[in-house]
Length: 256
Image (cartoon, rainbow, N blue to C red; front, side, top):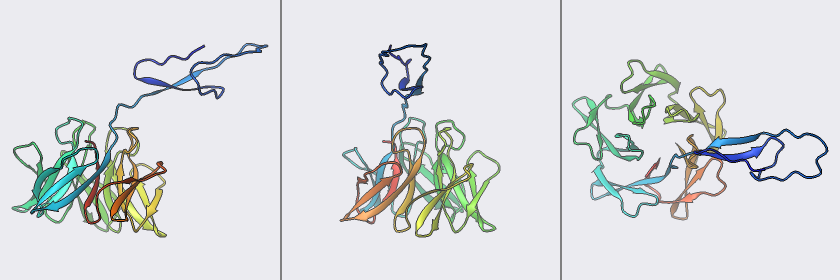
């Protein structure tokens, strides 16, 4: 007997613990009832390390697996990544202050997106599940963080200003939610909006990030450390690090 998955699915296991799709039962003396379990095969492209370096007054974005860098923006701007056009790939984005607001310049777009105010923390994320990353700005408010998402009239209040504000889809619903990272006993605690308990990972000597390193559709904690003149990206659930880039570069995770 063989369990055959439908299109887009793969075999996981039988209900009695057998892990091969094909099985032969022998010495059977009574009826056997077993159920095959299948799972959706992810079509999500895993996120990979991205490092950004200063080069002749501009930013060079190096993406692991891509031989040539993207040169974009100036070093007076803040470098980010995001899928601003919904093509499933993250492109370089730079943010500058301009006339009391922030301008988000996206590679390939002729005009910037104006959102937020100087002094706010700038992020990019898909906060409404439409497959497009929008600007998100974070400001301190009464000791907490207020996450303002473009297109939403009210902010999300989460975490404290002693924590590092980030965005991530930690539950696989296709929406990036506020995530904050705090120092705790020499480690990092990743608190995800809607999750009652934090994920403890890495040490405070490392840079905390989030990304979908295994392509399962959910973002996991990632920490980056300097090691022998390079950078080591440690991904939660992965036994070995990915070495990429050099100390002093901006570190990110993105989909090429």
